[in-house]
Amino acid sequence: MRSSSCLLLLLLALPSSAAPQTPTVPHAAESVEVSIVNVDAVVVDKQGHRVQGLRRDDFDIFENGIRQPITNFAEYSSTPAKQSEVAGVKAAAAAPVPPPPQRRSIILFVERFQLPSFRSDPVFDALKKLLHESVRPGDRVMVVSWNRGIVGMRQDFTDDLAKVDKALDALALRTKTINRDPMDDLHQELEAIAAFEGESAGYTKFGFQGSNPLGASNLPFFAEQTARMSAKVALLDERQKVETLKALMRSAASVEGKKVLLLATHRLSMYAGAEGLFMAGTNTVPAEFRNEFDARPMIRSLVETANANGFTIYPIYAEGLDSSSMPSANDRSLNPIGAGFDYLVLNNETPMLEYVAKETGGATAWGSADVTNLLPRIGDDIESYYSLAYRATPGRIAPRKVEVRVKDPKLSVRSRRQYVPKNDVVRMEDRVIGALFGNVPESSFQFLVTSEAPKRDSAKNYLIPVTVQIPISALTPLRGEGKTYNGAFSVYMAWGSMVGGVSETHHDTQQFSLNEADLERAKKGHFTYTISVASLTPSLHVAFGVYDEVSRDYAVRLVDLEAPAAQ
Image 1 (cartoon, rainbow, N blue to C red):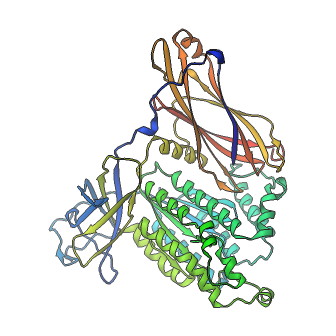
Image 2: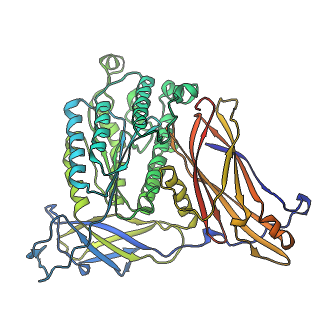
Image 3: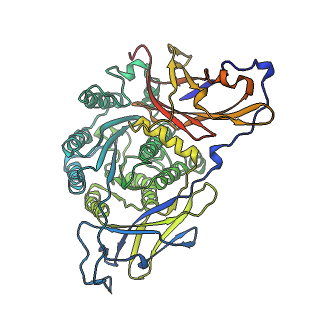
């Protein structure tokens, strides 16, 4: 999305020739909340067996190398620890009362990949088994698919495992279907998503209410993907995918309990598009290519988002060796590819999988057999773990290193390695993103959003003029010098679309000044903020937020912007 023509108009205020100087007002980004940091930890012995029955005093926790007092401690387990020697230490005579189980939120994100039935079926069977053994009434499971820029909400958050099974069965069938025509493959993806939305009582999520977005947008984006199949397209796809993953996690920022992202990926590359080089016959990635298509910074941002929102990520690469490309006999005759190609691709994928898992406290596996074996261990992670908490030290907004240690040298611990504090700007962005997924927070006031008939630019994008009207009476101006009142507000926006996933969050802060004599009259009017939204698709699911920088009150609402073709 591109935005332009941002304009703030003050109705019933002074003429522009008499506009006052830019006032100084409090800004939310300068405020940092002191937070309680929760860290989940899995402890195992040298044989890899899980250790239960440890106490608060068995742990140390460090932030940026400085030991922190543990303020809260709990052990969660499906089976109580035995009253015997635990890790070589006798358990206390009276075990503490176990805490009530935490609510689980599990996002299952499945990127389009292909495997034969004998390799695909065990993976999906193990996924369903994991969920059936781990999900309790009141827990939440979401199933999302990704295919070359198309995001499919296959199942909204639910604890109905029959619905989850249905979504996974549909993805499993697609996994076993080899389609040589990328455009036809995308059409099938859209039809499958539309089928789910059609069964949801008319409720759509990033959908087009029956229209075909590929035909409506004249295929500029996908035609380019199909024609080029280059590193630039791979980098764009990886960036969109990562932004969508980040948005999914941020949408659950306010949700308490255990949060897991199970990421079945086809490409989470260190260097986006390097497989194109390997396909051409080279086994090296030139420095120039590495510099231009280095995806590591975006992967680091994925890790930071997971740690900021309490998500543990389990990335799996089910294709593994000798399955990443599945070329036809004709393809091989034109460009013979041996096992070396698969190893090169694997070596471009696994470092990122391992990094993401390690930094967020998860685990990873590649190849269908190892993935199938990993999934029960993920179930153990969900069921049995220690929860520790400490009070974050005040300081600037920057990622901080977190380390959990067990005092017994015979034991090892796995936990997330980072804490990312949030300011009011980030929290407001979280609220706007959450609204895209149906988590619209309670607002302190109301504002109006209207749109005009869209136009098409020279690139055939849809340009949709949008107007946001904020009542002045909802804002809190402060008395300034002389007889003026100063204030400021910010307008936030993010969009979600079946094509392209979820955008980054944009916001713009506007300051204002009112003369004391005009204050009461101005409160009967509103500020008008206009923006032109440019989209490749005829419809957008857009969330807007308005934040009062003085009072810190906010309002959020969800709007569907549609071009006539979609309507």
